[in-house]
Image 1 (cartoon, rainbow, N blue to C red):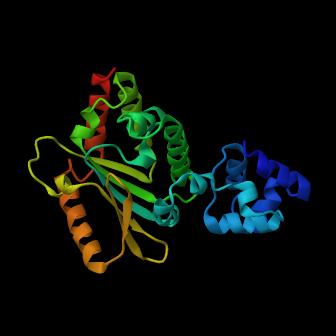
Image 2 (cartoon, rainbow, N blue to C red; image 1 turned 45 degrees about the horizontal axis):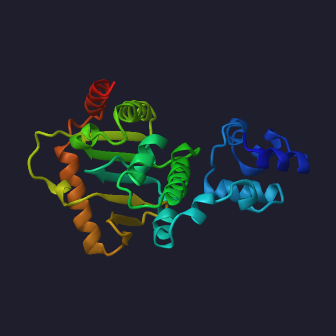
Image 3 (cartoon, rainbow, N blue to C red; image 1 turned 90 degrees about the vertical axis):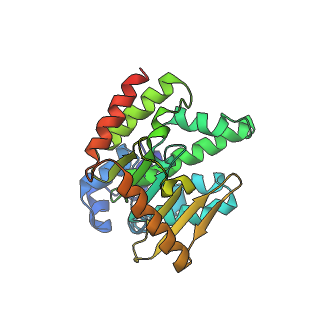
Length: 257
């Protein structure tokens, strides 16, 4: 339950129906904002906050912005506004698809992040996943190397839970996961993970990650190279339909039970 939204409705006398009319959405949408704590599209957040005479941060506090490091914030804004995300990972699963246990193991497993900071980074990562629960979520197409499914991050129970969560995520129409099988030899994905985002204004941005920090990519030549890498990794993945990959994920999940 979004208590801040509930209180704001009561203070202004608005009902779910009247707020929906002001914002221009279906009442069921506002109900999901309230009971499921869904995060509205930015323009709907603005309209709702104006109707309720509140700041947006009073109803939907941007907690992840305060938790994430400064260098990550430009990409965070791009990710939040994206209409589509194309994501390749060869070592771990994409952050937007990680379970809490798996994410905690990734962040704390190497012992390089202080224990107190692990929880802070974990909460920020989980908060970012709200972008996939919006009323108009981005289309996420993820390609992962099969080795990611078989690496025992966090132990057997964590991996079983994580892979079952991946299968469940694939039931959503805006999530597609493809696996590059271990039988594939050298391919572009061996050069490292990357993300390509398309914004509502048709702008394209890329993101590269390393041991120290991430880098937002906007240079046309660099973006062209990332697009070529994407076509390569997508071409090496199982089938043009993601269901073949889902079957593999389901099969590997059972090996962790």
